[in-house]
Image 1 (cartoon, rainbow, N blue to C red):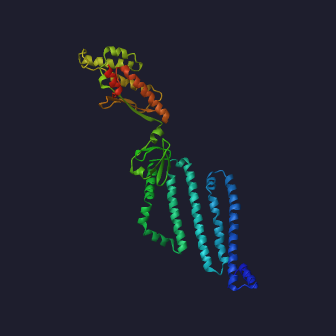
Image 2 (spheres, rainbow, N blue to C red):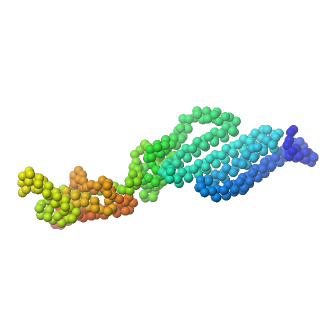
Image 3 (cartoon, one colour):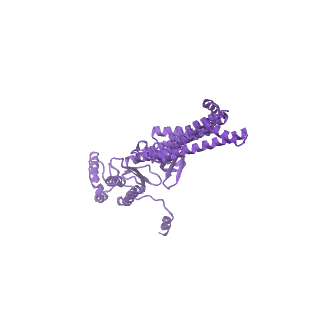
Length: 420
C-alpha cells in the first residue's frame, strides 16, 4: 500500500501502538481529513484576510468608480471563496493517494461547490453591472434589469447543467439533449418570462418606455411614473402613491399613453369647454358694438372687422335694417376672439404651440366653446392652477358679451320659479 510521508508516519505510529491494520488506516483517513480542513481554513484566511484586504485598499485608492461598485456588491469577497476550493481539489490526491474512490467523490463535491461559487460570483458581478448601467446617463431609461435577468437565467441554467453533469458523470451535451425533450414543458413554465423577454427587446429597440416616463394604462389602473422595468413586469407609481404592476408584454399587446413627448417639450395641453346657452347667441347691434368697443382686447378687432363688413354690405347693397341681411358680427364670435386674445396675452401659455378657441357640435347642453392651448409649465399643481385661472376668467367674462353659460336646471331653479 503506497502512502505519502504523513500518512505513512501515522500508520507506522499507530501500528507501534498495537492497533490493527484496518484501525490504523481508518484513523489515518481521519487525520488526512483534518489536514484537508486545516489547509482549507488556512487558504480561506489568506484569501479573505490578506488578499481581499489588499484588493480593498487598492480599490479605495483608485480613481474610477467601477471597482468600488464591484467591492460594494461583494464580488471580490465571493471570488475569494474559490481559493480554498482550488487548494482542496489539488490537495486531495496528495493526501488520499491510495483511496481513489474517495478522492473522486470528494473532488466531485469540491467541483460542485466551485460551480456554486462561480454562479454566485457571476450573479453579483451582473448585479454590479446593472447598478453601474442604471446610474449611467448613457443607459438612462433602458430596461437594463430585463437584460440582466435574462443573462442570469442563462447562467443559472448553464450552472445547473454543469452541476448535474459533474454529479452524474455525463457530458453537458447529453444533459442538454435530455432537457430538449422537455422543451414544451419548459416553454409552458417560462411563458411569461419569454413573452417579457421579447417585449423588453421591442420596448428597448423602439424606445417605447423608459424609467421615469409618465404612462397611462387604464386597463391596468396605471397612471404615473415608471419606477422599474423588469423581464416580466413594469412597476408604475401612480399619482395617489400606489404601485401598479403591469406585465411587460402588455406594453406591446395593449395600448397605452406615454407622456414623455410633453415632458421633453416642456408644455402641457389645456383642453376645456364652456357650454354657451343657445338662446343667448345673437347679432351685435350698433349699441352693443359701441359698448363692446370699450373692451381693450377686442376693440381693434371690432374696428377692423366692422370696416370689412361695411364694405361687403355696401358692395352687395344689403338692407342694413335687417341684421339677417349681409354680414354681421355675433356676440359669440366676438367672445371667441376675446378668449383667443386673452390666451395670447397670458404669460403662462406656451407661444408657438397650437392655440385656438373653437365651436364644437351644438347639443342639448348648448354650444360648446372649446379652449385648446398649451401651458408653459408642466408641473401638476402649477398646471392645474393655470388652467383654473383661465377658466375662471372666461366664465366670468361670458356675461359681458350678453351670453349665458348653459347649466342644467336643478331643484333650486324649479323651486325659485314656482315661488315667482
